[in-house]
Picture 1 (cartoon, helix red, strand yellow):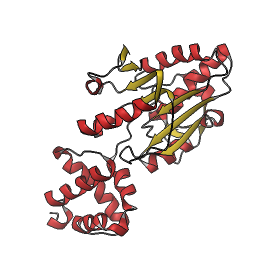
Picture 2 (cartoon, rainbow, N blue to C red):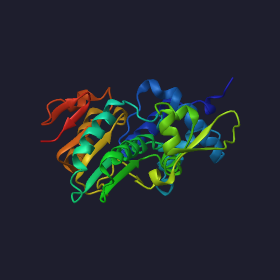
Picture 3 (cartoon, rainbow, N blue to C red):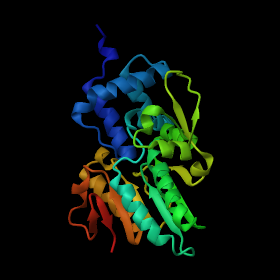
Length: 278
């Protein structure tokens, strides 16, 4: 049987999630204790630590603040695939077509919690499809941010196992990806082509930091399936900051289970979890 030292005590669990909330705003529910134990155990092995109390002492230490990056990376989940919630990309294509007629006005899109990059690359492919009919736009930029540095590294690389390419048609795989050799010969690997990768700028962002480095305004903001990590107070705080960065007439996209956080806001409901700023 495992010893008490190799099990996550309630006290250590409370310390870990309290520090995580303080630094990142992320809330860990009571029933997530086993998940935290499993993921922190892996990190402890990398650090050659034998008990959770040693780990909590480390993250409480002021000279170990760099461990917060690893803590966040360990406790955030990156479950995603291309063109998830496809109605959002249908709407993006429609609105992008309208804006492409004005080649002088800049177009800005922000994927606020981009994870491993499937969302911003889906946006880029959607835009490239509109280019086929209307020609490219000379001043269009896509910003993608996340708190998970490991996810950002994967996103910049743009290489994905076949299971992540769910949602892509065979035509899209041929046009926008190259098939590459995988370390696991039993699984195909695909990499986003360079001209698509160059459309997206990936940067680190902790929603909980006081000052966000982007200035906006953005015409489109995607913040999908990220707010579920935060309590209602933090959700409202972050949404208000995002909406200040959204241009008048711009669109805000949420995950399918996050619509309740948009109640009583001065936004026009366009479709399922699609909102327009007046």
